[in-house]
Length: 211
Figure (tube, one colour):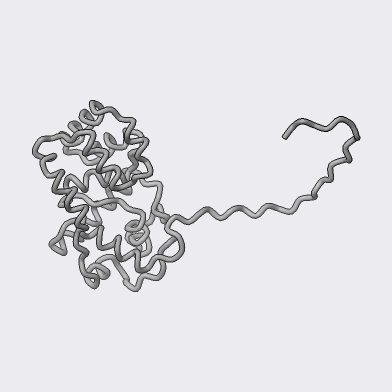
């Protein structure tokens, strides 16, 4: 699963014991660049690519397929609606944009309201018994995102901080208890023993040209 023993009985107990992590300077700079987005109600293709690259650079070829007009149209629709599920649906309709990447875009634009749905944070929440679905921290849908937001927003209110800083604190704490690889490979099935058939001897003749 990637998470070892967590010496806390609940998410609340962990966050009371562990100091909140400060924002990464590079991320803070990107958030500052994106501050005008809420006022203007849109962001351009360059901002879209920067946000997507920040979360998942491996999918950059997919992000680059979207023309500027498509990105701007999507951005306006996302920022115009007050429905969070609608925002998620609009973002994930673009090729390459997963639920975690969509959550990152919203977080970079509104860090006081959102948090990044990350594999580390979800695995830790699962180890604490705060969530039940997706124990490996993958395969998220809208329901997991909404549950995640609800949990982190409640903790942020209790601590007088933002959902983003709660998420970042959990992200860093997971590193201290991680065991094995973060993305565990599937264990291959053991094949049942079979009788090995011996091919009949080939007749002498002209050599084969197949490779």
